[in-house]
Amino acid sequence: MSYESLRREIGNVPNLITLGRLFLVPPVIALMHPTDPLRNLLAALVFAVASGLDLLDGYLARKHGLVTVFGKFVDPLADKIMVAAVLVYLVHHGLVPPWIVVVLLGREFYMSGLRLVAGSEGVVIAAGEGGKAKTVFQLLGICCVLARYEYRMIPFEATLNFWRVGMAFLYISVVLAIVSAVTYTLGFGRALRARAAAP
Image 1 (cartoon, rainbow, N blue to C red):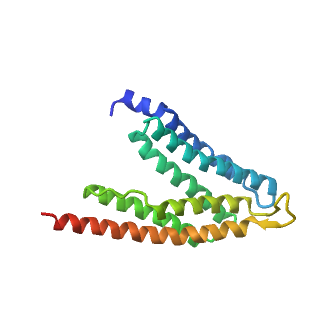
Image 2 (tube, helix red, strand yellow):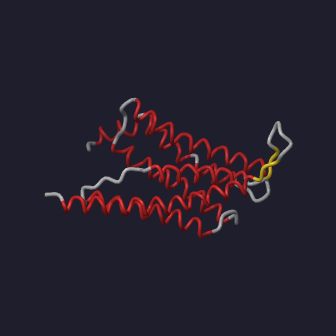
Image 3 (spheres, rainbow, N blue to C red):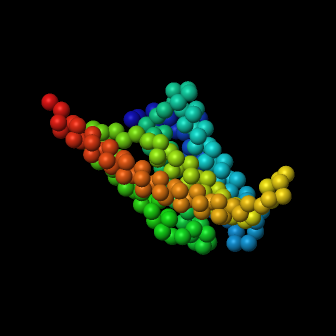
């Protein structure tokens, strides 16, 4: 890829949005506070915006035919950096058990390695429903844990403890992470066996 081609790819709108998501990570971390509900709510909102931009850049890239090599590399990388950075700081603040972060990040490293090996064997591992559901619950869980306090659900009198809801979502994401990783691995194994059995 030439320098001009790379510059054009970086400069298209979906890829600029992807890069912009990375610049939202420091504000999320800076807003996190041990006792200030407003700052933590703002951190959750900024993270929610960053998560929403992930959907927007993918939609625009597909709609306008702007899917690029640079975008295919940077988009998942931005996802991982965003999630990993915030999860690590949530552990630092004592809001998330370390083992959850180890499982979720370990799964991401494992899947990156599996896709690399699969690609070398000519097998494409596309994102499945389990992996997509894992991501949704993971992002929702992080948003809720960032908000973390008990808020009244206007216009109702009931309150909702966002930390408990967020942890429930994260536990679900851990289960989906493990199940989807096993599913991808078995699918890769089946693809290799089918290719070996082909005449």
